[in-house]
Image (cartoon, rainbow, N blue to C red; front, side):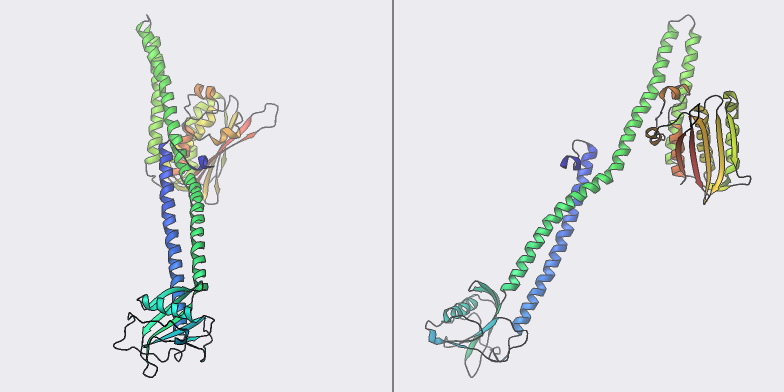
Length: 440
């Protein structure tokens, strides 16, 4: 599984893994911040709820305590050792939202006055008061009978009872369990989220890098194919040059050198044209598509006549105005016509039609010829691709024409498609159709 998700050992793989790592870290940080914010907000609400519960203790229970100028929460108080010094009472009007709590008032004489509605013994009340006072803070937390409590401590003076310190305790056991459960749930959610993010990031990284990988593979194949195509005529030129040196009739070999030079020049021109087409900005202007197609047909009429190919023209009598780059469209149509002529046998036919279709001007070129398999049809517009190597070489083709036409169509917002249909007849064969749709 991981071998499919991670790529190693190649520059593209390192780039993809770096992209994956950046994406994983970024999303993990965002998720961690989001979970922290949620926990922080929840914790503040939880703390506010505890504060409200502390403040909800009836004022009469705290003996109407008020701050004394000379009282201090950090004063050492000698706690009672005998149970008789702890006075426990319960009463008063409890509010509807009253929670489990109790109040301890410490007198100057070291006695405890406790208001409580729960079951605790004197030693536990003394322990609670001692820990709260020795804690040195106004607020704090402690554990009594395996339950968590939060307290609020304030120095106070009651003129009648002589109270020195008043401590309010509120049970927070359930709230603490809730917050602990929430924290654990968030940690688990974070871990699961990171795992999910990892796999999703891997899938998206693969998907994002696939076009780059395909582009690099096409580039590599293009360089290899171009090198191969250039190597062949160069080898022939070299062989003929060597033969011309040692021959009594060098003109024969020089003629072949010239033929190969012409072929190589055509290849180089096609490659340069393809590069210019990909980089150049199209100049879109309105023009008559019917007129352009008729003009390009005129350029191949001599070849049609020479091969005995019948050409049939169908389409609109009136003009079809499209908005595109006229020169590039002429080049694409000529390529398609030239391709149809090359792969139509003697006595065959080529049908050309020009029509309107919604917001497009449509040029269809159909030629009789050999059937193109679906696997070949999908690669027909690839550079240097030739379904029939031997016939293509004899026709002087390098497999760049259709690629150039496809590139032109893509740059101009047009579309170019191909299809092949078998003929049910004694002769067999097929009709190969190329459709160029140009925005009007």
